[in-house]
Image 1 (cartoon, rainbow, N blue to C red):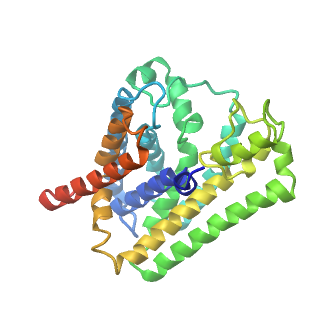
Image 2: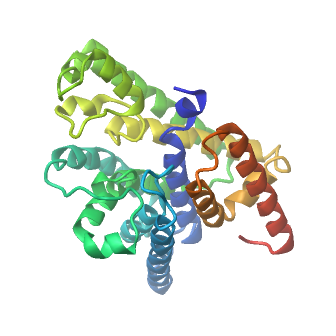
Image 3: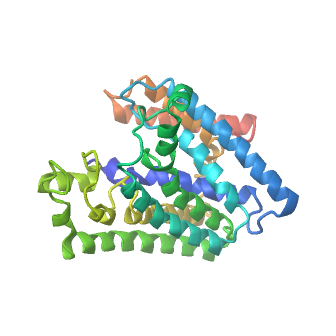
Length: 328
């Protein structure tokens, strides 16, 4: 695997969802959740926002080739936001507890229902897929897709809990970074114990056709290349996008660490971080444009050059927009 894969695979999507949760909390009362009519308005507004974001995701699906270079997350985001609506009034402690519940329950549902749920026909659904195979698309959004909402609700709810804290306090920022680091380390250590000290690795070998030791080693990095997972021991891995309790804990820990470190750095490096802040203020626009450009598949022969081009263009566009217009 490349360094970029080791650093970002799975964790970038989780961080995206974590920050979305923080944003939901900041827009619905910050440390004091809205109540009464204001809360009702928040819920209605979030429902409308979810539908609009999902519609954008469905439209972008038309631009993607059959063997798509990326799995868009926007349609899933619509489901994330719909599922988050009942949690808008909760305290940080309740939100963190709910996040923990989903981190355990969702992987069990994904594993237990893998044979019962219908297969989806496209990793980037369109309105046609939604109309012709609604059950498969719903299962894809909740459990079987690239970003299953029930698992990713862990990041959304944890982000909402973080957003209910006083993020301007240095102590909170430092605690966030330390806790995140501890959670990530604990997840990897627990996985190592289960796989190598408790014999989990050998249980994975042969659990599905074609899974010899070499295939399992690859699966621990790149996901297993099998139609179904033949043993609950897969819940012990931290492989990106496997959505196991430990992979969720790892990605959540990484996201918390990144957020805490950048909040601490913002005190002294505010001017240097301005491009990131500008891009963060218009993520929907930049992400949508990024997917559309990827759909042309021009990047495949020179991925690093195209990465730099995407990054520079996005930063410059966001800075110019923020200077001339304001909010993205």
